[in-house]
Image (cartoon, rainbow, N blue to C red):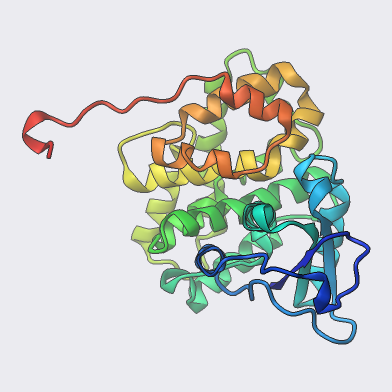
Length: 319
C-alpha cells in the first residue's frame, strides 16, 4: 500500500541532501489539497533512512509522456504485494511540482485503497476478498481489468466521500463480465453495434455480480441495488449513483487505461471510445480531465469532442 510521497527537486541524480531543495516544492495550500485528495498518504515526506521499499518517477519523463508506465506498474505491483511502500518523484521544479504530484498520485491511487464508513465494515472486506478471488493476476488482460476496477472504486470515493456500499461494490464489479468474454483477447472493437455490445456486457455482468456476492453478507436490498447499477452502467441516466459510477468509470479510463487502450486497439477505435466515454461524463467530472495526464494523442481526441450539455432547470427551480 502506498503510504509516503517523497518529492525531490532538481536532477534525478541529486542526492537526498536537503541543500538540493532551495525553495519549498509545495505551497501550504498545494500540500493541503494533495492531502485531501489522497488521504492516508504522507505528502512531501522526508526521505526515510534505510532501505524503505519505494518506486521512483522522473518528473521530466512523466511530463513528456516518455515514462514507461508498464514498467512502473510492474514495480508498483511488486512493492504492493510486499506491504507498505513509498513513491519518490525526482527532478521537480517548484512551479510544476503540485501538478505533477497530483497527476502521478492519480495514476497510482489504486495502491492507496481509501475507504469510507460504508466500506470499512467486515462485510465489505468480504466483498473485496470475493472480488480479488475472481482475478488471475498473472493474465495481463485480467490484471488490467482488476486494476481498473480498483481504480474506479477509488475515483468514486474521490468524487463522493459518502458513496454507499452498493455503489462501491458496483464500482468493483461493474466489468466482471469481461472475465468471461474478454479475459484472453479483447473483442469489443468487432461488435457491429457497440452500444448493444456494451448493454449486453452490463446485463450479464449484473447477474455475475449478484451471484458472486450472494453469500458475503450484504443485505438483500444492497445486493439488488448492486445489480441495478451494474446492469445500467454503460448508459448515462438520472440516477445519482449511476451517474457517479459512470463518472468514476470514465475518469479511470482516461487516467489509467487510455494509453494502453490506444496501444492495443489503435487510433480509430480509441477515438470512438473517447467519444463514447466523454458522453458518459457529467460536466463537473469532465472538468477534471485537464488535471489528468493522458498521452498527447488521447488529449487531442478529448479536445476534438464537444462537451456534453445539461438541460437548464425549470424556471421555478432556478436561482
